[in-house]
Length: 286
Image (cartoon, rainbow, N blue to C red; front, side):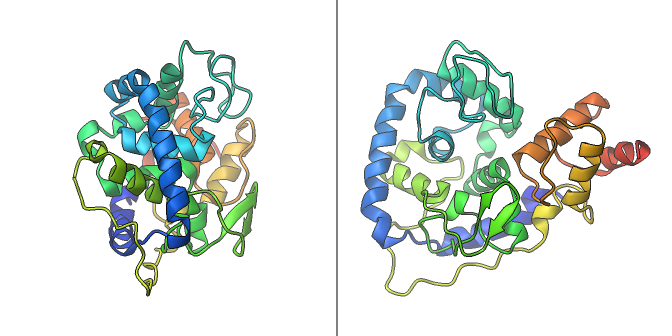
């Protein structure tokens, strides 16, 4: 079986090594980082609860929450709905919760981020979990994900402009997780991840190196090598997945959650990764 993190880790290492922040966005980036860091400090007790229960580091959590909800603490990281009432977007019917921190713990557990382990949150693992959290669709198209790399030299454009609709000429205008993590770390070194790797400089050189090549095809094969994600999505829909998955070949959050639910239903480890045991059960239901 092909382990997705070990397969993609070298790409994260090479991309981190060459990444430079877009100099045109540096001032805006640092200003926004200061605002969301101040906001996180006002919610320090809740973030401490999230880290204690799930192991998710504050650096990753803030950058991810910024991408998902613009760090709006009235919203749950799970899908951006209000945490003080039942969610209406996928995943539906979560909550209400007693606090934002409680909603964040629940959201991170849904995606098994609590199983990474606090000591395993290195830069490469943080990038992998960020890409997995959003989905591997851009990688299927030979592009680095704007969710991670927007506002940096690694990101060359391309994004989904609607469900299942990829536009190679569209550009992600929101800051990616990696530049935001770099900016946050420059403001507060205590946010450093487990490996303490030096992070890329914010200042860009006069000549920006070309981005590292993206391993093509990995996004469609998370788990078992040779299994097409579009086929998997069709099979799960045939078995009654609700709401039906968009058949776009992208192994994103919705597909991972659907696989985890299928695994739990059939007494398999619900890790959301599609391996031989899950394939065998699925084929047996064909």
